[in-house]
Length: 391
Image (cartoon, rainbow, N blue to C red; front, side):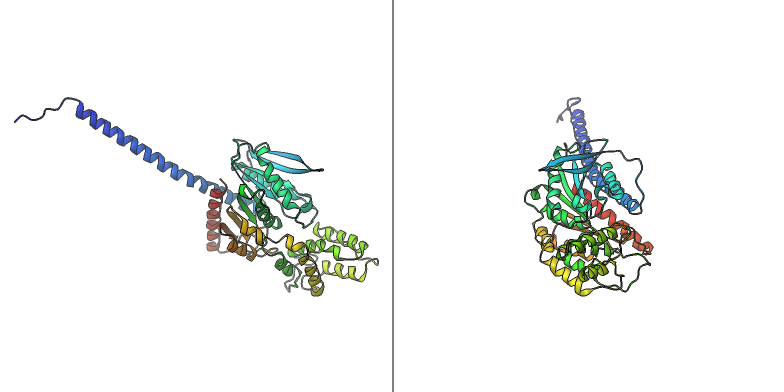
């Protein structure tokens, strides 16, 4: 029986085609694997870079040689103009942006550490906008900045550096961290906010204020005030309208501003009323003393007016985007439990409690090697999730 005689080259060609197909399949699989690995790797690199940079920043060291372009922007807002600083990467257009709001400080967006943080983030590829909110720079704790935060968020696409941005978010520090969350819940921008970052926020302002006004037996060095008094003076300033005497209000505003700015405090003069003198005494009182009755009067006054305007309870229930919360484990101004509570109430939230920080500065606590390793690990993991959230 004669067997089938193959035609020369046909089987060779089929085998060659099969081998070629397998090579293409293998190459495609390898390319897909590389892509899948490259995306997480990019987030990991971002996490490590940002984590190390923030550690240096907390210690007061600025990153050298950053490729960033900076600008000051003024835009009309009704009868007045609003100002902000912008930071954009010099190498390529940014596709993500963040509006970062400073806390209550006379320097506001011009604070050197906020400038350094903004430069670091811009160098990683983000477009950064830091509004100059006048109310914060003059220590006014009001709800008015909520509107201004929304204003600048809405202006991002029209700013130089924001033309290619596809995702924008909000970030805030301390008091303004909570306001950033409240602003993100406003209906005019809620559906467009891609992420929120809050550093040292509060959950219950009234609860925090009780701690700020409480006596603490722990002594601070002579001629120094504890960090929490910074917030106590701001709260007292917000309640000055309770005083009936206009001269008392004007004098005490100068006293509180001097304390907040760490300037010489004017002595109490004979022109103060007894009530004004009592307020003065509470402002300059040592840490281990307080006037509990006056503190309670101030609390009741603000509970009826200011505190409800700054309560985030309703806002956090309306948030649609992921929220990233960072809090110093040894925060001596706003307790870390405030972020723990917010984290429990916000479904799509991530929380980093850092033993490296107090409120915004490095802690002087001695950490074991194991604590440092765990803290670094937690920071990198948090920054990895942050990278996935903002890009």
